[in-house]
Image (cartoon, rainbow, N blue to C red; front, side, top):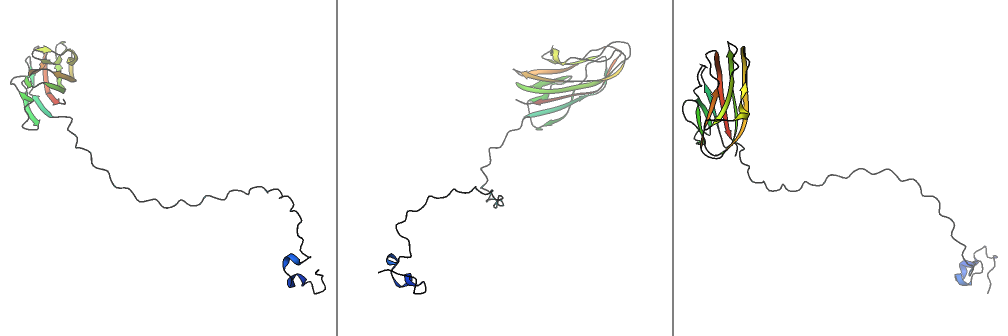
Length: 192
């Protein structure tokens, strides 16, 4: 039975769709058309909130001090003689690695030591003054400092010495009647 459009174009409403002739059936679909270009990417959204901070890790072991003992010596002004060292201070106060040996000597135990020494020297007759350190009466050549032949000069030196056995360290000066050594000092620190 056919459906015509005499019923106010409502024929297909009266019959099931498969009987309605107004609907085209069995016609093959056409090919899919081209896809249009992709539109521009939108702006990046806002960064989300920062997450919670993780737990703090365990504390590492305590470090050890780089200096295990230190001592500070001074000596009064001298002319034509060796300075007499006086222990001014030591840390720790009960340390035994660096101790006074009397006169211009210091007893030091085996180890590695960083030393600083100096003097303000005046020469009145053209003799160049020198200061140095010696271990067991042998001058450490790298510690020799020489001043000016006339006038005053500040002489200072540094040394890093490894002492293999218990020894006597001395603060040496060249002696002459025209040489005066003031503000003498010696700082010794055990670092190993």
